[in-house]
Image (cartoon, rainbow, N blue to C red; front, side, top):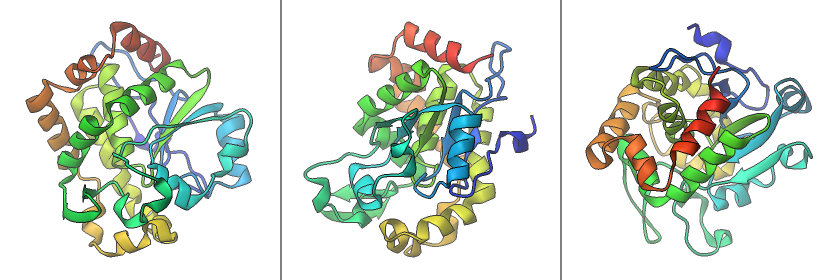
Length: 261
């Protein structure tokens, strides 16, 4: 389908789209207005909030950022909205007091070795690492989205890496084919310059982003393909990984009932 209809244009976030309109293996289609994906929501305007909450019926936000990121960025505007519940499920391994964590070591694309940064992980390997390090966050996030009584929105900083992993699992669980999952992931590329420009405006992310070339931030299809291949090789696939960590047939039914038309 035309991906343009899936984008949600806001002033304070630039990588927001609906997971509706995607096909499944059994001939169903994902419904609009059920699950959204986004980048950092710190800069949402009053009009943005009115559109998300009033027009789209947003009720649950799944925040995949680390505790340190949230501390450094401060409470976002949606935390002040009574109709919206924020659920925090960090997709990064965290240890110690968040207040003592330097911002440059909590970003999703950096491998951590004690308090020293080491080599950059290729995206597919980083995505696999999130499954190994935070399975409870993944399942918790999926169950929130499956049980929401309105629209649910998952986000991280760029809305690409951690959000991309969660969305890949979500779409896999409801039967969306691999090519559509990869295509959805790569849509972020059409807005990557605006995404990085936004993140560079905050000290939480600026130094790290400036240390690498723009090309390293792209949402390349081969990155998601690599993740799916690695998951297949190591776990037998994403569904096998989910089931191995306590995901049940009832969970799948609930997510399908929520997301499919």
